[in-house]
Length: 197
Image (cartoon, rainbow, N blue to C red; front, side, top):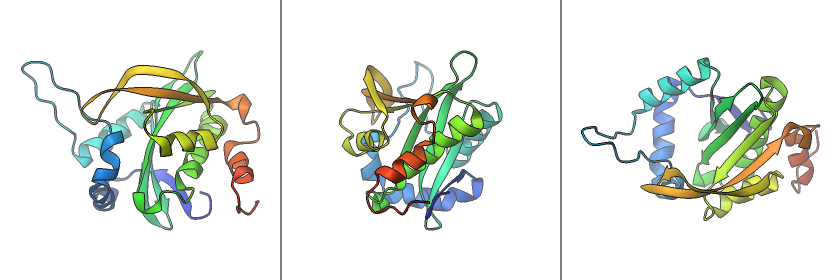
């Protein structure tokens, strides 16, 4: 939690608020949202229901492979952030995906949420590296990574199925050694007009 922004686990009872925010932001999110690729012959590709999605996220979280959060802003659901692809052993790495309600975009909600998640991953979970993969055309999302000091590492061609096709993504990364005092603290110092705690 940081001021008006809270990251918390996603719940079944978030369904109504999640659906409402998602519906209202359909056009805003469509160009950046993961889609289900065409199914192999004889199979049908379907988007999961909200309940199926939450059950899947919980199973992955219980297996230690994922941290599924919603973002609350001023007490209301304003987006989602998922730490996924958690890999242990010699890698200790994960990647973050996120979306935010257009109504609160530009208020520092997403950079703060990402900073909270990264600090949790490095300080509590014990990860060493976190990546964010972003479509090159997604200027606002790229600015989130750049404001927080993620390094741009290169392009992954046709990396994810987004908006109906396989899309290129830029890879941004950060390691624990790059933020020894925490990413949230660095973000607070860099953000104009933010009171220091």
